[in-house]
Amino acid sequence: MSQSATIPNLESRIESLVILEIIIRLPALFLYPFSLTRRMKQVIVFRSDLKIGKGKIAAHAAHAGITGYERVMSKKPSVVKEWLSEGQKKIVLKVKDEQEMIELYEHVKRSVPAELIRDAGRTQVEPGTLICLVIGPWEDEEIDRFVGGMKLL
Image (cartoon, rainbow, N blue to C red; front, side, top):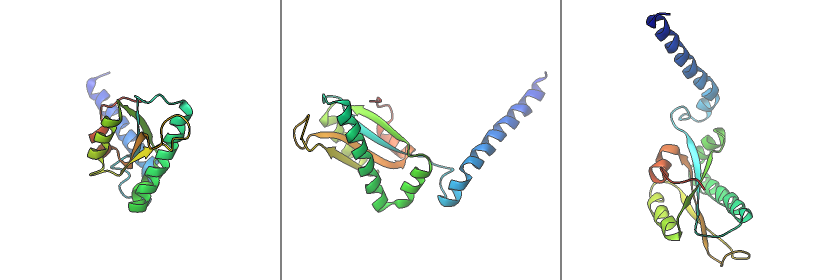
């Protein structure tokens, strides 16, 4: 097969993939005009220095997810609707300790909705212990400016 026959075939496949992506996302385009150009996510960051059980982590991840949702919904409902239409992507990351989490929060909160989550202290940790940080939901690229390169929990 000649190279000239292969290149148009490849171009045709790429064009088909682009058209397929547009068709899949077309309903969201009419509801949320920026859906083809940006992706949304929510990030939950846990402290790795705390020795807490999986159940506590799960409970706080749920608490953080709802807190982030409510915060953004009250200020920017169109962002939440777009995030919901994309499947509510969530990423769970870790930081070394409380100081690192607070530093991250201080940087993030200037441009992306973020909230610190503290524990009531009824079981495994003292009341008011900083457990996690929720960022977003918000645009992937903007969140990645702060968390790009961080490790998954």
